[in-house]
Length: 89
Ligand code: FES
Image (cartoon, rainbow, N blue to C red; front, side):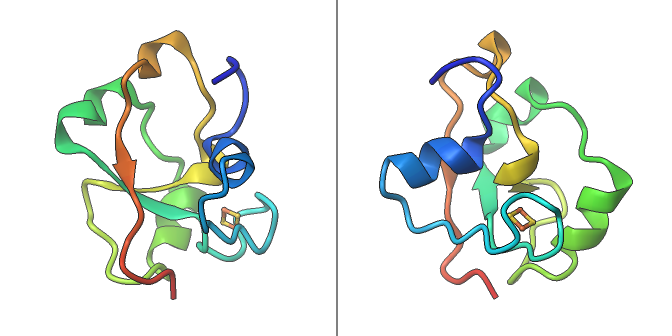
């Protein structure tokens, strides 16, 4: 994946069914994923606004849930594994 691209855009380009209804404006939480526990240290901490929006996601995990519209590819994310929750909302 190209550096700087959002995980949401990459997943959608690959045909993954991540809605991203608000197109990254942090107003929907339909881009929610669960990060593999072993990869959590690779990611920057979520912003307070992202944490607030995750409260609206379906069964958010306090440690592993993230919004893919807020995650951009960097070299540090090499090998990152995320999974989609059973539902988005
Ligand atoms: Fe809406 Fe990420 S696309 S919060």
